[in-house]
Image (cartoon, rainbow, N blue to C red; front, side, top):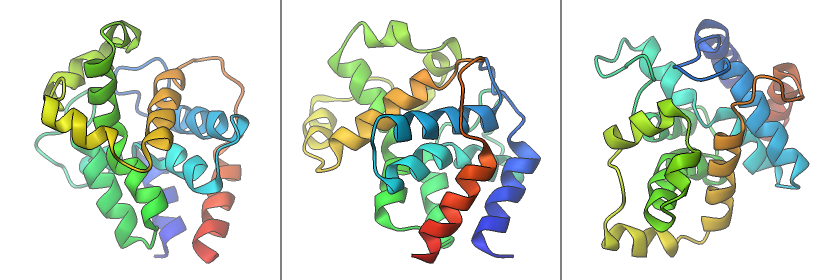
Length: 182
């Protein structure tokens, strides 16, 4: 099975779950990617926005014992590793890998940010390591892709609106196919 078929299968099997959020994971992915596109981000960022939570699906498909009703805490790393195996480049996988750390970074940098998180995201923050240490903050703030990582995190936070207009998953699957072919 090729990469796009594997991704579609994961979305079909697990994308209807909400993980205690206000919308399904498919709709959340469509929202995040649409927000990235509307805000002028490049194709890699748009695709990462669509695929950023795929690690939840991978964990669920593997019957991971650490999978909870809110998903899998280490889904960023698991998703990035899976996407690497499917042939995605660093531009996509790095954003997928770092979007969880971006939440930890923003909570550490801005006390008010925590209040903007959904209840499910607040709950998972503790499982994901909580606030960053001063050493983690220093290292994270030096990442060359920091702006794109933070943008993806913001799209992740905003992409939980049950009424947001989006480009459909069929559009995003075709974008992914074109990206992998280039």
